[in-house]
Length: 149
Image (cartoon, rainbow, N blue to C red; front, side):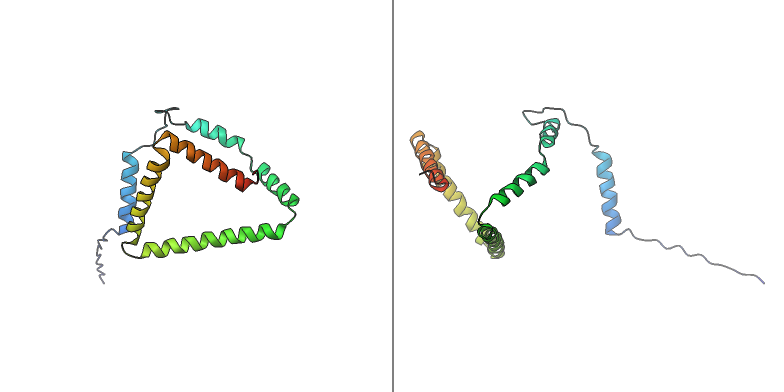
């Protein structure tokens, strides 16, 4: 009795996932990561950033917030303001999303913003007298908001 076996080879085509992994592996092989010098053309070094990050203590921040919360007399007012601010951020995000969905409207809004920014620079920033006027107006607004006036 003789048994014959046949073997078939299947050639599998590479999938898109395999291609992405292969491309990423090639890119990593071509561009090795290197350490950057401490200072390149006026940039802050990573050493300085980590030193500043070590000075930040989240426990102190949480303690300060807890102390301020305990000192607050009208907690319901603060909660109302926080809820209102959250609702305003959500509503503005929804509004911006709706505006972006309308064709041509985002580009028109960009042009309006560019035009207003150009006018603002011409009116308040370009000339020395108008800069002084702007500083006076900002100082007056700050004093009104802070209650110093």
